[in-house]
Image (cartoon, rainbow, N blue to C red; front, side, top):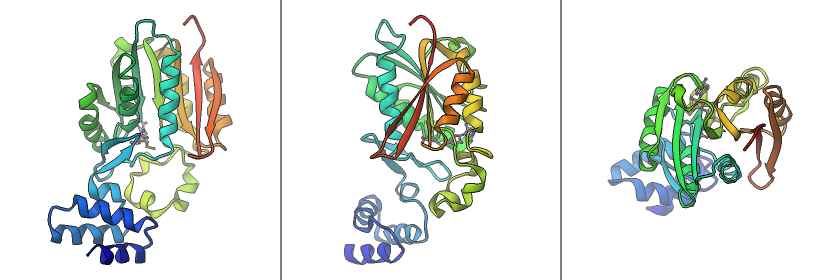
Length: 266
Ligand SMILES: C[S@@+](CC[C@H](N)C(=O)[O-])C[C@H]1O[C@@H](n2cnc3c(N)ncnc32)[C@H](O)[C@@H]1O
């Protein structure tokens, strides 16, 4: 049975057919459902949407249909956010963390999990898409965070303005004209609002950066995942907002993050 599933997946172009077959076999409650799951995978649905979860930073993150699948490269964003928190405004081992454009909530949950052995984390997350918000609520519950629905900062409680130690953001950053060139898995099965970063891909980064100083604590950091090519524009948006911007990259994960620190007493 396994060999035939591997064959079907391989014929459909799945590069990791053996690993995927094992995941599908483990996830399927019955042979009929397994057959249906293999069929859906062979027709191009993301594996994570079929099994209902994605592995991210060693955590199992629930991912429903229509919700952006967290990417391995965003683990670099998580690591940078944890490092920033450790060097941030907290003097009492507690951090207020905000995950904007949270999707499944994977990034915020992983940051909170990474900091949990070091102190207390208060996690706030927000997304504009109802499906993402519902999914993030399920993922965030175990770490005790709160998820809001709305445009960028709009739904956040005003009481946290000026108190955020770490503002972590993986917003859409694909330029509109390049979406047609994305792999079908993303282009056809993830919502456009999760991918489209506007004409140059940096539109949301500019909006996030412009308002960040109102939300960050002195010494707090805004971290935005971007591409190597777009990093100068993402950094320029942070500089224009008065943040001290630094670009950080990881070649192995093909990941780039711009870190903007609120200049002030920490
Ligand atoms: C690239 S996905 C990343 C999701 C998540 N941060 C992750 O890394 O898995 C971008 C997310 O931004 C959300 N989004 C797009 N525009 C938004 C806006 N104006 N306000 C809030 N969320 C937005 C989308 O719904 C999507 O969930």
